[in-house]
Length: 73
Image 1: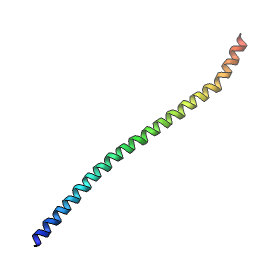
Image 2 (image 1 turned 90 degrees about the horizontal axis):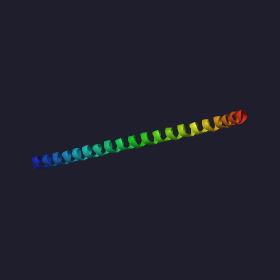
Image 3 (image 1 turned 180 degrees about the horizontal axis):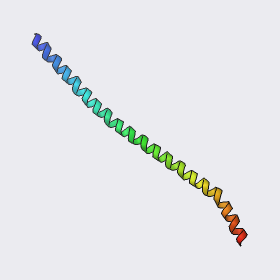
Image 4 (image 1 turned 120 degrees about the vertical axis):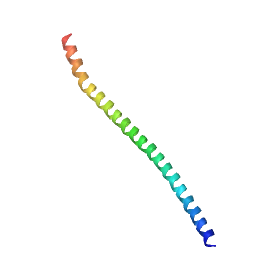
């Protein structure tokens, strides 16, 4: 009887171990996906900020350029 309980315990233990290993693999995979998504969001945000900053700089410098061109004509 002791052997039967022991083997059942080992089976349950190995089952839990396999479940945890599979779950951790899934967590690692989802973690990688989450990190990639966060990096993409950061890159998109930085690109958006840089784009708007450049357009703002262009808008600030463009009227001065137009003024100098109009004075030249």
